Length: 359
Image 1 (cartoon, rainbow, N blue to C red):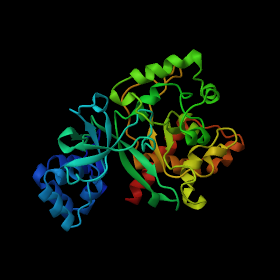
Image 2 (image 1 turned 30 degrees about the vertical axis):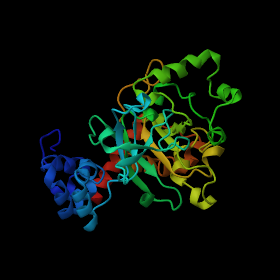
Image 3 (image 1 turned 120 degrees about the vertical axis):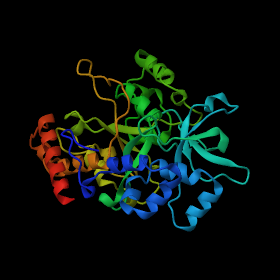
């Protein structure tokens, strides 16, 4: 937990990662108790091994945790194994609720086309013995940020976890054209020949789709009913070397206009020249995930591959601060301001210093 110079930070300055290191030293049987006696520790590890594993060890422990107000471990990410249907084995998904009277858990599987909340793939019921909870941040999970629609502000932003092997990260190995370009195509749920042409997926590049399906793991193969995720790369951060993707997950027009409003998601997608987001990112956005994508190769301009990278709430708060500050919510771009990696890095250092003083 020390820094590069060997200094150990005071307890009140310790970040979430430091507190998670402390939790790793607590015996598994005592981790739930540790969370109950330390609010700071509980907040830091609310989506880690304690939440998913400790309260799932037995029915009795889960029932006891419920009586004292411990947070529910559902939903959580799992991997399916040893199922008779081979296409499901090795696939990740969300366990949505406790086992039913038959001992089966409803699981929403990764549909294979990048959707984080699949709409066309129905949940399946799986025995507990055929599920493995994903809890390790080094090898199984990666941090992302969920921007809830409706009332805008930090209270509607929260840190979430995604499986490292989710197809949303597999898709980043393709060039950006291999995506649904706007909300209309997403609403239709499939790609027509015209839309294929819009995405650059005509005969000349059809092989990239096959490469995508064959890439990595079982999560690459599309399930029946799966849809392409409505995702796009944020241009302003990408121009500074911070490549992040925004994925919209709310069904279009599923809520009222104000409830579908998502100003942070809109401003994240501003154009580098006009300073304004494209029309399909200005209204009716709904809930959206923001996650870090594969870095670009300096020679080819294509995603360079590699493991997914954590994108913490602190990272998004800096980008939000940068867009509203240096970029003037896009007005500076409209007036000719050019973003640079050096200024972006400098703004991050200033942001971190302000946050350090605030603590």
